[in-house]
Image 1 (cartoon, one colour):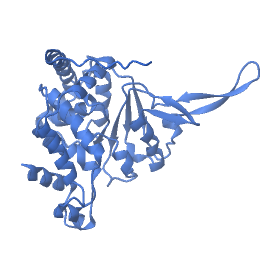
Image 2 (tube, one colour):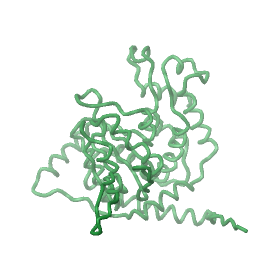
Image 3 (cartoon, helix red, strand yellow):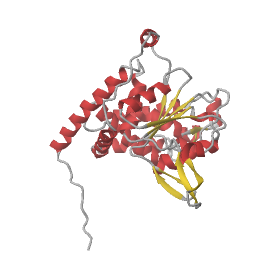
Image 4 (tube, helix red, strand yellow):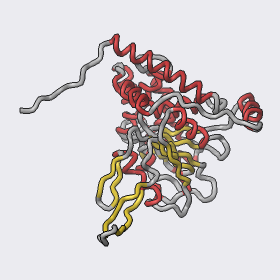
Length: 335
């Protein structure tokens, strides 16, 4: 006879105590990141929200905007075992996942031994991910969704937590390949990085061209990050927020009764987008010091969560309409 043991449901007082402790840790993380990354507050917030929600993020911007430095800083600050892969056109799937090699022992017996690749890390920095071929890019599909890889028919589990922070150059640049739609959908959000404000750039000039740069400081552990991620998943979500997420995501799909969307959108976000919005709204609320998400969180995260999960019609692109324009219209329609 089996006994089912249910997890103890924390009381409201215990949830508040956990949240206050998490807020203190998040404040320390913000401060440590801010000592190294100047300006770009929205970028840092969205990237941290993706990690607190337990997901992956795609950082998009032209070279020289500190995308790689941000990922490296987060690995140090959060205490994660990190690996970096520089994606190039000649990179092979085995260079990411690892491979089996034939070995012979002292007794002359031969056998295969698996040598793990750089994907076996708590934080994988996929630098310039769109410079590799689609075949190589797709090597990350199983690991990003199922948190294990299969090599030669054998399963190999990845460390926990496991996050992919990928950097991407704009597709207009020479020598880049578009990411497969299935892989894009596995990123919790796409974070667009623009040029810094003048005051932030002035500080960059002063702080980073001297004899010594401020190093990143470790303030958290991987185990503590997992605890905060579990807290995010236990946060209550008001019914109004659930309805706002469902309404927004479904309105972004063609064939749902929205004539403007039918004219502009070829394919829209699936249920994974709704899951992503729910998790990210919870994480953003905690990041801001609140115990429950609001509809404002949904609207603020609509663009980074939905933009890489939609494709526009030729007619919409010919008119100069962007995915951001479509999402902004859908958000305004909810007000």
